[in-house]
Length: 308
Ligand code: FDA
Image 1 (cartoon, rainbow, N blue to C red):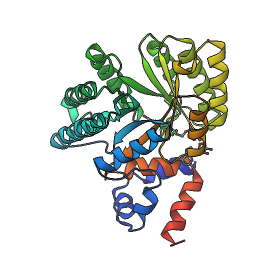
Image 2: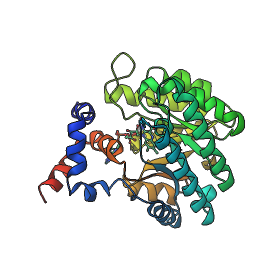
Image 3: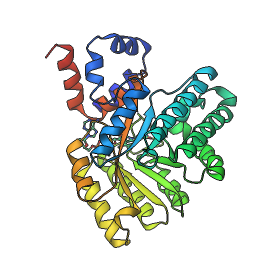
């Protein structure tokens, strides 16, 4: 409830300006964001991989309304991937891309521009030996994202996608995507969605997550189980046993700065754990979603504002 309210308010331009302008925010943001530059992102990946984890790097930004900025974002990914491959990190680091950051929100040509820019990122990823996963944004973008995924997969078959369990449609999408070679990241979903398209209660979202997870674990693709929820992690282990999936047959994913103890524990037990590493200066939308996920984060933010 508090979370949806915060997500709604966060879209008001005045609130955006106020939060972005608070001097202390940067310190608070650093808890969830690796830094502003390519160098910061590479350094975070170096630290994570040295600790036995893997990474997927997100250049922050979304809902770009300008074609030049969309192309610039694709360029930033190319620079990042080159820097990662220079370190020999290729297969231990992949990238995550929000299609709205590379042009999807640019009106009638949006899908075409996003596909072209995403293709450019996939080419740079191929040269670096890395994969690309498409993030999933609000429900109005799902059809377009899955269409762009299909087009990309013709040339870059390892391209993955995030599916959000809170959407009613997602079980059917998981069925379509549970095929050989398909990489699917299952998440609960982080946007404020209406009751006409999405489960509203935590327990319904969790139950839907288990149904989607079962489809993916029983299927022939590669499930990427993106959650910090202990109960869902233990259900994943039960399903892995039931469907005879070895540790290399699926992976866990968590967000930078969240449940780092659990990330290490799972990696220590022999699992692949991929940490989602956001970097860049356009942190507002990402940061507000992290605040909305957990009321305690809002208290942390308010305490920081009060100087405590
Ligand atoms: P839940 O929210 O129930 O949290 C379980 C526990 O994890 C909490 O009790 C707490 O301990 C901890 N936790 C969770 N969130 C926290 C936070 N913000 N701060 C501190 N602790 C926290 N969403 C989306 O719509 N599209 C996408 O493309 C992606 N991509 C994505 C990639 C990866 C790798 C991850 C891990 C997540 C996403 N998400 C996402 C976000 C996802 O939809 C969801 O909002 C968060 O993962 C939180 O849900 P949990 O499954 O962790 O459960």
